[in-house]
Amino acid sequence: MYSQRARRRPLVEQVRDFLARDFVFNGAVEPGGLLPSEKELAEQYGVSRVTLRASMRSLQEAGLIASRHGVGWAVLRGEGMRQGLDRLNSLETLARETGKQMTTENVESDEVPADATISAKLQVPVGYRVLCAKRVKLIDGVRVGWLLDYVPEGIVPFDVVKAELGVGSILDVLLAYRAVGVEYADTEIQPVNLAPDLAERLHAPVGAAALLMDSIAWTADGRIAEWAQSWLLPEHFRFCIRRQRQIGG
Amino acid sequence: MYSQRARRRPLVEQVRDFLARDFVFNGAVEPGGLLPSEKELAEQYGVSRVTLRASMRSLQEAGLIASRHGVGWAVLRGEGMRQGLDRLNSLETLARETGKQMTTENVESDEVPADATISAKLQVPVGYRVLCAKRVKLIDGVRVGWLLDYVPEGIVPFDVVKAELGVGSILDVLLAYRAVGVEYADTEIQPVNLAPDLAERLHAPVGAAALLMDSIAWTADGRIAEWAQSWLLPEHFRFCIRRQRQIGG
DNA sequence: AAGTGGTCTAGACCACCTG
DNA sequence: AGGTGGTCTAGACCACTTT
Image (cartoon, rainbow over all chains, first blue to last red; front, side, top):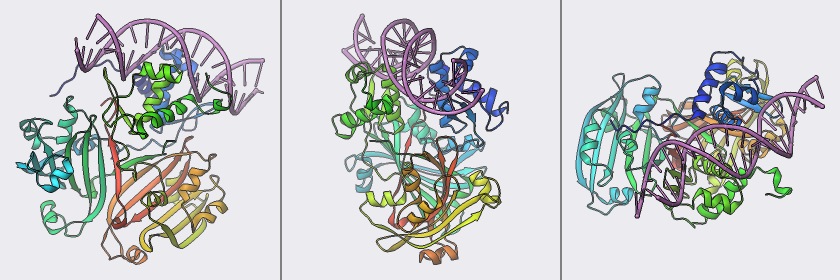
């Protein structure tokens, strides 16, 4: 695997998990009830109030607690929503988080020269060497998605990507390569009726509603690492995003 | 040091907006380029590094910059996609940003007691008074969406919402009310085939692919301000989201 | 008045990257 | 080795709520 040196787990995260375990999830504080004061908790866990507050903020962002100025921190009713299309995770990771097993079939891969369309999407010259991969994804043996990926040469050795094709996710490979530095992906989402060829590949009815995700993965230095198109059947996924208020800029 | 008048707005937010203005939005730093160091910026704005870093984190969460340990903060490719689903904006706002005019028809509104479903979604008791609004949205005279909204009593006076129903957006009203404090919405997205009744309302073919957005708007203190369901036809929208790398993955 | 959360600082040390 | 970001602390003061 692409192991990294084991980092020490930040105190903020440790304390956050302690708080969640000691007060929220075990029901020690009933929904609507107040946590002990920040001062008290900071002493109890042996951290500064700054660190403790960072943990609180993290729990707040997760939707577990809310603060009332001059009163205290209250435990909320909802458990927050586990997401999320808004995080740059592979389908494999999403499936794993919901406790399901994802497998791959019908893998095809080719090294091809970029045509006009690919050239425009990947921002490389026409004729540039590109790895094209196609495959079907299954959850618990049921076909749930058809994936079409293009990776330009010079990002990751093609052999490495090919080795992962039948097993895992291209995105996971790109994320694991520290040298690549994939930071985010701009994704367009569209509902589509399945065309006959796609319906056949997915063993689904022609015309069934599917989600088409068209995604460009960017590196921190502005290069394009991948163009991914996915046709996904909704039955086995919950596509969730958290839409946040726009900042003052 | 900061002025008496400015004291009301937290320094972290002020500095964040300064940074966005001075380095990102005006193009002073190229996409992929590095900002000055934290030390330098902290001195320049006259704040501690702790405060400066909180501002940086805010910009990072907004998808504007990314950090590279030991190197610096890089400006990401902004501006490209403004009309993002990952921002908490109304359809009206999205349409306006693309230069189109959105109108409303077939407005129905009722004050009803919450049934079991509404009660569970809004986290209010069964029988709690709720405003229910239904309407069709059009872009340039073409029907593009059917909206179904529930707003619990005690958020905004029903009269205020009703006055906006035929004109603008409920979400815009909620966002404008500072006392409400809507911070984010958790949204589930699903592709669906249009049922006959919806197809009729939207003047679209039965079975056509549409996007169903099911959204719960939260306030900072953990109350639910709105439950919104929207069936949207894809022809006149581009649904975009920026998926960001998970922190600490 | 007392207690709570909200904000901010100065300084320290660690981990990572580059030359 | 030197600079950069990553983490953490102790202490201070402000704003809000309850008593």
